[in-house]
Length: 374
Image (cartoon, rainbow, N blue to C red; front, side, top):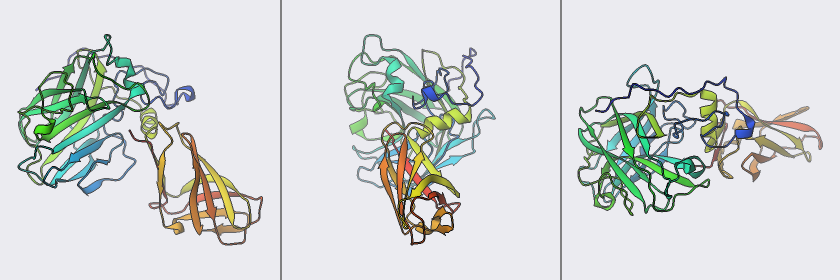
């Protein structure tokens, strides 16, 4: 098991106020302060979504974190949750993945990953794909149900450059701290746009299709080598992960704790949930029955988001002088990276030209999700 070095890079402090001029940079300087950790929500504190149960596909749960599952010939079910099982008082939360239905014999085309996708606008500083590519170090706390060789990997967006890096779990179901150092890739195409710059993955089981050469850059889509253990074989086994850091250099420093306000803003660049009993938008009645409103996002999102919202209209309400009624029709009229327009229809009784409020009135189910994930 590897340990943290004694030397620590001390980050500047912040008072929690966001620098509007830097909103939407995805994790480099959203609060005006440069940060060394390229990972967003590496301490697993932020979870705008709910826990996921009995999933058999790729799912997000904690912000910026997803479990990727390619079944092969078997169905592997898993639960994903935010948990308070942690390695020390330094952390308060971890990501917990429970294997509900395992796969004792992994097929060639099967793979099980925990993945974090880094935006190209964030990873461009690494200069991958150029002669100036920088060495990086990945450090993390992990609990695996199986001892032996595991892999963490870097891949590009096109899945044609990859580096599987091994680390060894010494004790099952025990928190261990590990770090791996990876030289920068001087070949291949690495996006520096708002697309996927780097795919960082932890492998817990992989078939031969995804196995390559350990500790080497390859022109392939490899996340492990042939000595990767199978950590998804047994039902009820649990994997925990927290304290994830990716930084420039060949030395792992102490985990960089950032204030909750700026870290939440980083997460909301990719996913924003507006929920609960709350004011959603201020609008205007354009007729006795129709209202239009405008909702600003808290930060500029990575791209124009897709959206999903609760279908039970009784969970929402239009309020105007003399009127308080649930909409009979609710729709999104437009969406940009900064805001969304709402179009609601209600029963007659309003007055054209009057201002109105669009509200969520159910503490649990009045939900709008805006999704701009990588």
